[in-house]
Figure 1 (spheres, chains in turn yellow, purple):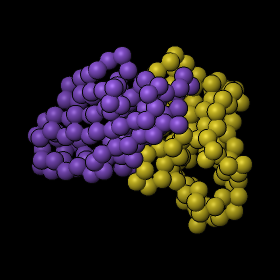
Figure 2 (cartoon, chains in turn red, purple):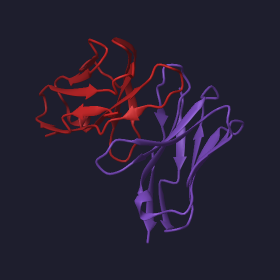
Figure 3 (cartoon, chains in turn red, brown):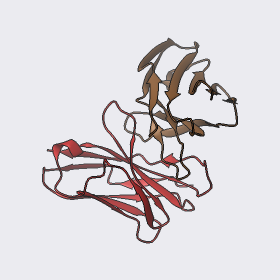
Figure 4 (cartoon, one colour):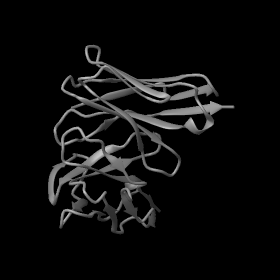
Length: 114
Length: 112
């Protein structure tokens, strides 16, 4: 079990640039989640995939954000025209399909907007 | 939607003492309640979870209790050790897709 892997671990970029993060879930997990965590707060749900289908998106996910999971394995989260308020830790989690199974988190990508 | 409140926000305990963190939730349909431990620079790590058909669960020094009527659940850590120092998050899940609603976290400091 290699766990959930996220890359890059840190990303520093200038306001207005586009950034893309990658998440590789635990291999047999069909469900994949993206969360955002700001300093001193708990993670907040952004979006969720069942295999390649994106089934739910939070209102936090503005039209500058897009997530994909094209082959039902790894996922990418892209932020276009980054803003200062996008600075946060972006966390990915995965779980099996069966109901009420635990979600396992990666170590996140920390995004800093200059 | 679900709202989870967590108390206290910080907790300082002497090594060997017990620590208790309490959470309340708003959605009576919530049926799964995990607890995560997060160390600096790391992602949340699941330490214990409980489902709504169970009132208490224990794993070595860690236990969780659930009161569905009052809509609150608690984490108990006994015989605390310095390596228990971290931020602890409670969470609740009420829908079949698995979206978690987290509390704001408790910073636990165990002093030798």
